[in-house]
Length: 269
Length: 327
Image (cartoon, rainbow over all chains, first blue to last red):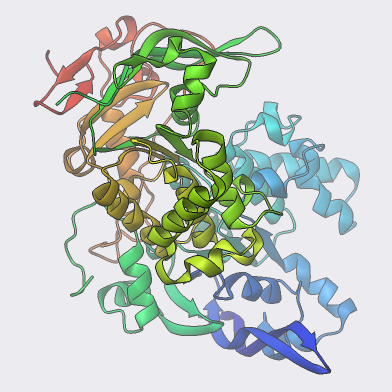
């Protein structure tokens, strides 16, 4: 197995106010270490404010960590200069929670998916369109809707569109930041299936950020639980569910809504 | 027991600028008893929010109630004069909105925002209003009440903001609270906190609630009864444990199967494809004959195409609108 991402002791501090020369800092990430193997999924669960999204931004090279190292595909990305980082960014793509806000409402579906290729100056116009079209088809948007704008699509279709846009640069790592949370449960299942199918056929690696423990357990090979900027528990999905060790994990599990039979649960939940 | 709120054969339609008519609710009926929590489960486009808006007659100008009756404590809500409506809205029936960060005024202290509700509905003087506000905030925040009262919304967490909305909703002592996706923007731990709060309030104040959500998991711990909404119709109504644990209508069954269970037994079921509901969500702008779920239904029969299924009682409290069950 090959490691795609290896984060070691990552720290990110934000200035949290200044009073008479003494600066206070907020450690959004307080020494985070984790690794993801190629073509697997790591789910990151935790409450709001636990640092999940900061970690996502650091991994996507959109925020510079205060300290620590981040090896991606054999290179320490955190140590690279801005110019060299720019070459890494296309390989790490993001899908956000709310596709209604993360898609440009003035562009057509085809333009949205082709835009990253324009920015990266790849291919000529014809090839770009062809690639974008193929990808739309791949994520389940019919070709006849390629000229429609985001508001003509349903929530699930918009999220498919966001996934197509993320995939057009052929990234190795996809960061899914609450990508299913805003969807209805029947649509969640459809998008989850699409993600599984894409992972199997394109050997994609996912960092799946969520607060839905059930979906994390379904999609992920490993689950990392974050609390106050630290990873407090990390392990195989089954093990974490069967015997959660840290208090934060137990809390999250207890708060996970469930209505299926309550069998096979650890004591006290 | 006489129901507090009765909805009978409610039809609501929206007219778009192009003249197209969208039938958001198509013959919805249900009762709400005193002190009861009714969970309304539906996906986007099923008519959930239209239901909340029509109960308070707060539909946008292009939304028309085309038929049916809403009775609240015996009074016909649909034919109430504006004056009478003012006395119901916010006072006897109140609404908790979805997005606390949007529903609160950003530049007003929490105390003033709760007081504003009282000023609109209750003939109280300044001191009495202050006092009532303090009491309401104390039931929701206990020790922190004074600090919260002095804060602005941006100084509060999502869960605290949601509590402020609850404070506004219960300030006038209503008998019915409608909550439209009240926990959608909160993380699971805070979600549970708010659900526990609802339970406590129901006990303490004898509130009835209509909890509208797309998340079946929320209803399992809170609702007494669940109503499943599809294409503006109630396809299944029954006690929460029956509907969620052993759903009978093909749509309810398919919907609940989409959610991966937390306690998966084996490695094999993980990363397996989840069952999905095939086909597209219903187009509400064309009135079709027959069951609205028929095109997607795995168990459809010949009769489903031509006739509308009526609600069939399975037990005293559990009804299903499906031809699978002989009436």
